[in-house]
Length: 219
Image (cartoon, rainbow, N blue to C red):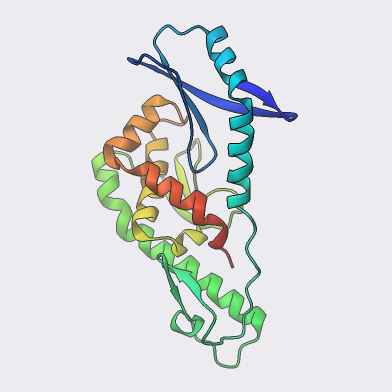
């Protein structure tokens, strides 16, 4: 369901189950889930959400502040510069050749490094998950995106954001599993998340990492 808050429509994922009380939760990515007893009326749900308006607003504000834009990087090849690769920080010269290159050339070479590295990582890691899920994409592509870590098209083509090369391997695995599960369930419905959880029970931790660290995984 949706509620309007400060001229913005907020989506609330309602989950019914064997429980006695309502519980509203926001995950690290800023998504709200309202857990409710089976048979709870929509009127009761909306009334509960109205009482939580201040909490929802404050939670959204904290989430947006946590995802603030980091300071832009300087490409000089200096020892004090650090760049992420597989969840760790490295001096630029440990990732790419830096001799006699301008800042723009260094940035371009680093992007090429990430593209090539992620292509190799995905190729090495996707096979076991394909076998486990019995799902095989038509193709796999490494792309540049400012909004998505991965995507699955209607014609079963997967794409992964090159910036994932900056994340730990287990987080890359989560995005692989996430997109493979979309080959079987295109929507983020309950069946989709059950399938993701069957392969990776701690997937919420990986989502939280991307929500928390994603703004630092950039050139």
